[in-house]
Length: 446
Ligand code: SF4
Image (tube, rainbow, N blue to C red):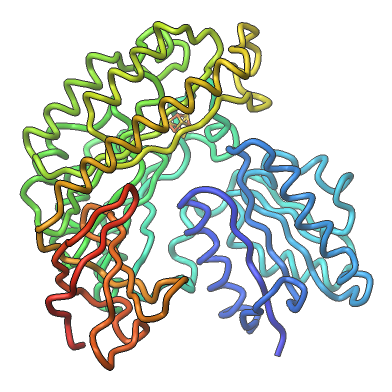
C-alpha cells in the first residue's frame, strides 16, 4: 500500500490543516500513514514562517530526502503552509526536488496537484487566494480521536508590525455560525470530548458578517452541543468582550483557561507594535477576568528586545508579569521577519542586553507558574487523560481544565492506552513549575 508522511511546523492552525491534509490523502488517494518520511511515497511539509530560521529548518528537512528521491523518483514531496504561500516564486530554486508547492488557501487541491505532478513529472504550484476559506468540510484524520480543532475564523486584520501572518494568511474571514455549530454537533456525535475553537483572533469573530452572532454567541452555542470541554485560541486583548467573559464564567464546558498575548508592558512599544491597547487597558481586562473567574489559568506571549525597548519599557513588562500572575508564557527574543514593517526599524536592542532581560523575564514567569501550581496542592482536579508518560509507562498523563499537565500512577491493571480520552479525578499532591502530580481517585469506565 502506498503511504504518506506529514510534517507540521508552527501553530494550531497548521496542526488543524495537517489533520485535513492527512484525511484527504487517505480518503481521496487511498494512502496510509508511514512512520518516517524516508518510508513514505508522499511527503508533505506544512510550514510556518512565524519563527526565526523557518526556511533553514525546511531546507534541512527537504534536503535530507534528496537520497530517497534519487533512489525512487516516484516519491512526491509537497511544501505547503505559510512558506509555500510566501515563497512560491523562489522555493523551487533552492529546493528543486520539490514536486508541489501549495498555499494556505489551496489545501483542498493538494490531491489533484500531487496527481498532476506524478503524471506530468513537472512541479505544480498553486498559491492563489481562492477556493474554500475553510478546510473543515474536508475529510480529517484527527491526531487524537477525542480532540478536535474547529476553525471559526481564518486570516487576520490586525497587522501587528512584527507579524507575517496577515501577509500569508490574508484578511480575516468568519465561518458561518450555522456551519460551526453543525460541525460541533457532528464532533460530539463522533465521541469527541474536547473542542478547541481556532482563529488568529477568535474574539473578533463575526465582524465581517453584519448582523450575525459574535464570539460569545459561538462559545455559548458550541457549549450547548454537549461537548465536555471547550477551549479557544487565540484571543486579542482589544477584542475580548465582557460578554465572552460572562459566558466563560457560567458555562461549565468552557475551560477557565485563557491565552491572552500581552507582547509588552510598555504602552509606547505596544503602539509601535500596532497592538491597539494600552498597558492600563490590558491590566484592567485581566482584573475583570480574575474578578469573574478567580481560578482562571492565564497564559501569554511576550516579545523581549523589540526595537527601541528601553530599560524603563522592560520594567513595565515585568510589572505586568507580576500583576497578571501568569500560569505560562511563551517568551520570544525579538528578531525581524522579512516583509513586516518592524523589520525596517533600526534602533535595535543589543543582543546581550536583550538576553539579560529575557533571562529575567523567564525567571519571573517560572516563579509565577510555580506559585499558581503550588496553590493547587490538595485540590481534586478533573483530568482528561492523554496517554502514558513518555519516560515511564506506569505513569499516565493528562490535562486539567486549566490546561495543566498532570502525572499520576495508572490504576492497577489498567493501561494508559485504555484510559486515553477519558476523564479521571486526581487529587493533586505535588506541584512543579510546569506540571502537577497526584493520586487518581476515580476514572470513567467507558
Ligand atoms: S493579531 Fe497580530 S500577532 Fe496575531 S496573527 Fe494578527 S497580526 Fe499576527
